[in-house]
Image (cartoon, rainbow, N blue to C red):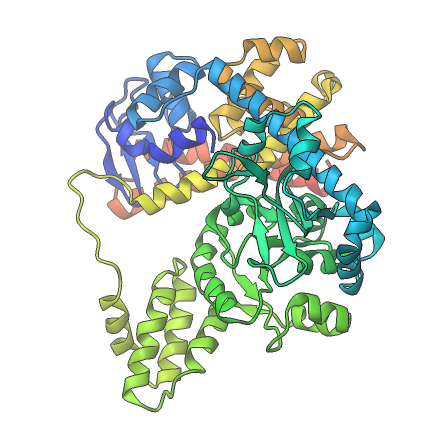
Length: 589
């Protein structure tokens, strides 16, 4: 997580803006007299679920907490970041610290890459790797799979890798930091991985960040991973994502399996949208990473206790994803590798029959109970209440409450009372602020802006687009202040070097990621034109939704007067513009 992301996650926009103007509750949101211009009737609104604000009066603008502080205090982006960081208790690294950390990470990438090449060459050519080659062959791995996933072999030696890397100029200290060697109690170091089949683990950009290693004999543990390092964080990694990302986008679906071998077998058999979590548990970070590619997640974990527990935990991630997660119900004792190798058609049928994760959870819980007995009815409610109570969508909540009532033959009003008793208690707040859950959800929503990032990457990587004749792209189309800041400075710059020089140092690493973002090579002009339309549509839809909420609120409160007429008039223009967007999209841009 970058310092900017950390500040966003720890900052509540309602609390910040509330220090500049008096906010009053307005439905799910808040309203106030605009702190930027004089007015008699409130036209300024704050939206805690989106962590955003908008003035429908003379300002006719809005943004996030960064843009508010920049506008109110007359600060640059960097100054606003430091101001908010101080409030949130976040330390912003100095430029020297950032550059030093970046250089260190770059060296660790080079070290891991050299180790991966070393292991891979041994697997292909070393007589000592015969057992590893036989294992790969028995698993049915093709030569292409061995190459694509850069499988390797670590020799059964204490210092082979250490000596190889140190001979190439890498220090013992850096090898320790990369997790490739281990220090003993006597201070001596030795290779971490010995006599194992090696699986390089890469990030979404294809850079080697760590390793998984499988024993070829009875050595324990059977699988050994890299430790936590500046590059390797087990909770945030999805194995195979670098090779699967394109297929995930194209198919608008990702299949999550449990292990390296499941992923390799899947890809080898044409199932190229498969990835694996590092362990049995899918994490919130994993879900947010995949959400940028697709909202359609399918879990195909081993049908053992660990896999079942992982699926139970996965229920809570549906709220982050804003979509159902589905589960492939595997035959007992089988994993995806077995099923795919034995019968690809059987696998496809299992995929077609995937069930919503909540239905899977219901089946798993109720299959172990006798719902004709009072005791097991009570147990069913006890075990399923957290799942049902976790649902934010009222229709889905009602659906599964009804399902449990029917299964347990319990009147719905009695079941509702039982569910209510099992909801976590919340304490009343003295100050009017949104729940932390809303703030966290809003951060996740703002932190992931793939369309904004894609559009900026197009502009940065194709300078010729600056002189194009496309419809205007306006700064307010960018929800995230860091994206808006880069776009604004880009408009005033004549080269990448001048852009980098003009940007605040805290945005340099993010700018580099945009400049290096993988993009298709064909038709950048058409893709940019489509981006503008989509960003404009998103902006106008958001504006219309906010206007509609204000309209409904005014009607409910009986406040239909001059202000409402003005808001209705402002609402007409976005509708016209939206129709223009839809017309252009229908005509192909």
